[in-house]
Image (cartoon, rainbow, N blue to C red; front, top):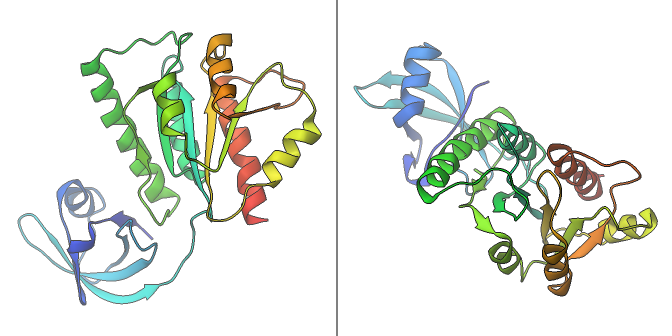
Length: 246
């Protein structure tokens, strides 16, 4: 079953209109015909609208609503992944897998040890591409919302953005005591907002760690092994997913 996201205004009573890139994908790539069924989400209420294609116009796919499936697929807490910019295409991998695991937002962080340096123009282009990857991952994993990829932030800006979140975690190679990490993760509850800070290759600088700790961000350990930046965040997200859904 193919799934697409639309704006709430595109769902009107028993009629749903699909436009833009999804129009081209449905008509020219998937070559779906009138009568075939697809799923639509509006990214707001979490519901899945099952509909059948009625007709194509020059720019729209006109669909008729068949039924609404109440499917609560979102995590009961909102998780924000603050990811230090990694090299090459690792960020695309991180975003794709984080969206599949249920993250609410991805915030790229230009930490001091980041090898990747983006000027404003390049940053905007990257974020646009990353958002497209997030949208594709959300469709594939049948998310109820469309997670956002935010503009690139400095570490200080990221700490400020996370200031009012309920639980704030930062894996740190000098942190010890896995039992304490487990206790912190087990405090996460439904309805909370959770910030997870992941450093780039080489980790955060000590000054960034100290600034994070001063802001109330909890240092946690990921075990005895050193994980790559593209692995560390996914490990934490997996813990949180288990905690919230088990």
